[in-house]
Amino acid sequence: MGIHDIIEGKRHWRAHVARVKALPPDYRIVYNEMQKYLFKVGPVDLADGNLLAGIVDFFAEGAAAGKSVTQLIGTDVAAFADGLIKDSRTYAELYQESLRAKR
Image (cartoon, rainbow, N blue to C red):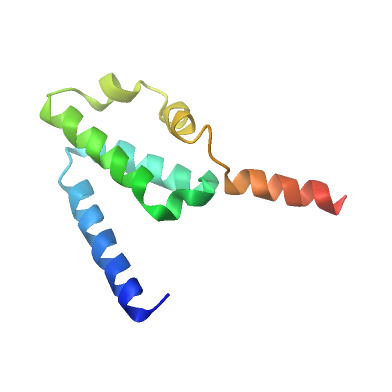
């Protein structure tokens, strides 16, 4: 990864953060909680940026349609996030596999 890639990555991240800040407060709170959760257990391919950007797109469309965030995802944020990554390998799974391999 060169310096150009790092700079470009920061530019994309800043644009992403600006889009999150433009969401209504309830959407922003839920997004931030989902982001923390995904960073903790997250899929190995989270770094490609498509999942988080897709969530912001989904939330922006819901907000524009006048829906509340709970109308879009329900009341269980973690269950919604788990549904998004159900077919992805997660760091939590890799960690569990490494523990089993040490036995």
